[in-house]
Structure formats: C-alpha cells, structure tokens
Length: 202
Image 1 (cartoon, rainbow, N blue to C red):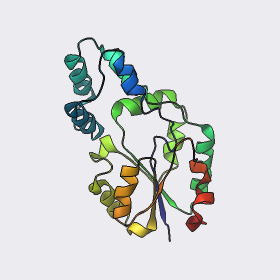
Image 2 (cartoon, rainbow, N blue to C red):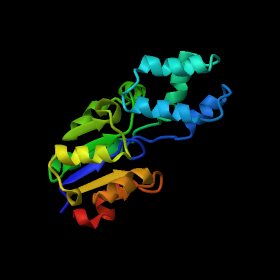
Image 3 (cartoon, rainbow, N blue to C red):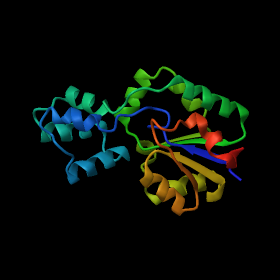
C-alpha cells in the first residue's frame, strides 16, 4: 500500500528546457560541458560550492562570459509553472491521504529564480510534508544515499513509496531499492493524471 508520494520538481511541476543552458553558452563559444565542468555542476547542485565561487569558476575559465551572462544562461533552463498543477497538488494535500514529499536536484541560483518568478512557490512548498532540495541536504539523485535518507527519515518501507521523476536514471536507481516509480514523460504526460495512470493509488 502506497503511503508516501515523492515528487521531483523540474519537468513534473516546473517546465524545463533542458537544452537551453547549453544553447545559451554556445553564444559565448562554450560548445559543451567538460568532465571538470560537469563535476563542478554536480558539486554545486549538492551545495558543496558557494554560488559566488561557482559563478567565479565559469567567468574565470571563460573571460568572455560576464557574471550576468552566466546567470542568465544558467537559469535559461527554467520556463514556467502551470497553475493547474498547483491546484492538483493542493487538492491532494487537503485530502491528506498520502504523505507528500518534494525531492529535487536543484541549486541556489535556480531556487532564487523560482522564488522571484513563480509567485505561488510558497503555496506550492506548503503542500508538502517535507521538501528536500539537493543543495540543502548535500545529496543528489540518482545516488543511493538520497533515497535511503528519505526512507529512513520518514520510516517508510520502499514498497510504501511512489517516486515520480522525469529522469530515467533517477527512477531506475529508486526502483532498485524496491521503491515504486513513475518515470513521467514531460509534454506527453501530466502529473495531474496520476490517479488515472497509477490505479494502485485508488
């Protein structure tokens, strides 16, 4: 029996353009993320690098890139948050049948953008029993420890949890622990159809 639903944020609630940052950086002659850059990105996502140092890494490595240009490129992945998804979540929270958790790989710059551009972000967070952002808990998906952290913190068996995420790598890692998963396909599926798709919840 499912007792807890764990939601990803990006491309579950907040629409993303995952190629946007790469495309934006190409304007400055940065054609791809090197292995070192990917390591920096992941470390920043885990809160292991301060925002100032993270920005500084890129602007020093690429002098043609101003701080403002980098921040704009970095945040260009973020699009919009359809209001009907908030309504769905609020109804789910009001019914109080399932424990609701948000588990997101994100970072300080992205959350600052969300707080500035999504006026109902506080209402959104209030729907959850717990909100876990990777840069605040210093863990990230798909690493095993982040799923074990959630299970342990909420005293849940894996089979009592449904995890919804758009990244196959993340849902595969959770499934290996016995967590039930929905690898949602953005633009083809909508989280508001959760109960139509997952009859186990009804």
